[in-house]
Length: 123
Image (tube, rainbow, N blue to C red; front, side, top):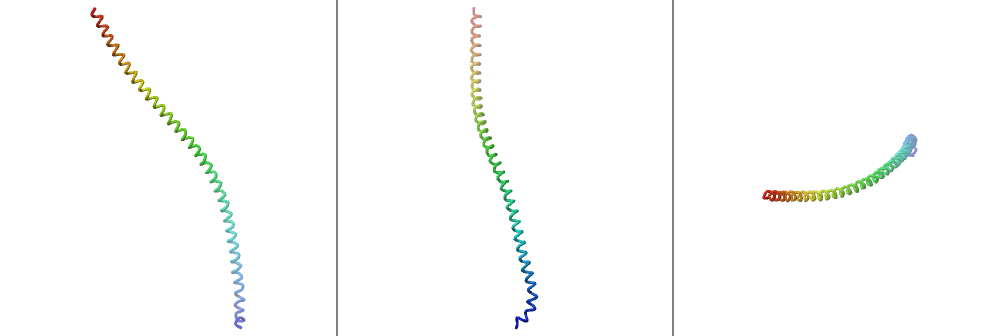
């Protein structure tokens, strides 16, 4: 009996419930489609990021190779510079030694010249 009294109210609530459930289902479908398109966009973006990352990795490897080559050249230049420094030091020592010999020679020649002049003047 009580159910019979509630039938007019239930009959008014059924269309509202139907609209609510259909809007909820369509909202879920819309959300699902939005999430699917968002996931597709994310996958596309990830693909582009992966390509960019690959290109950057290749550039990094190339630059690493170039840096290694430059490092080798720097080591060779340093070794060459050290060898040149050693040669310059050796040449300076030779020049100093030669300078000493020249001074000694000039002194000996001067002494000999004085001795010769002295012998010539005695006669």
